[in-house]
Length: 217
Image 1 (cartoon, rainbow, N blue to C red):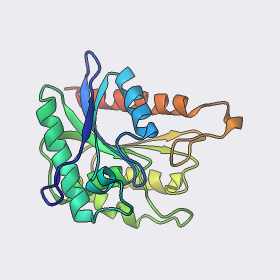
Image 2 (cartoon, helix red, strand yellow):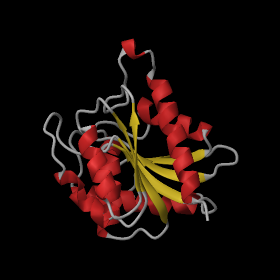
Image 3 (tube, helix red, strand yellow):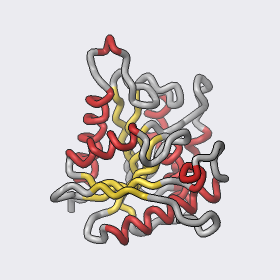
């Protein structure tokens, strides 16, 4: 999808009677077919949200390291364009897990993406693990789209009190949903009595309800 690095693969999962399409990017250390991404896409499909998952050039090739930011931003924009072409009848949202949520908001902050109705950031990486600050969120004030943050309350890359302040201070509509007991990968401790599957189902329900509200007149 990036003109500079060539094409990458993508996966469309469209349930019957889909209400919207979410362009869904993966985290820094995974890829579009990682188990987490497949489970999240399946959970979203169960709530009527279609997904268009995609790789970046580095994750497509399987090599170590990440592409430069310019290439990743170009990949996000290309993925949104390809997704809209694939399902032009559905309202289009975009975002993803961790790094991809941040790349999508950066892309939207730098240049308006006309076809998007909103951005969903799962486990937005607000800061380095155990080093809380909000510098990575400075660009969010330039995003002229509704935002949904879905974050675990054990996420060491997004202290919840800081993320709440970030979301409440944004000039655009922003909602934060906290997943009780979940870490950055939405995993929960055994003693919580919940499973990762249940956490993903909750994240999907919240996403679906939020998307439906964005479509209301």
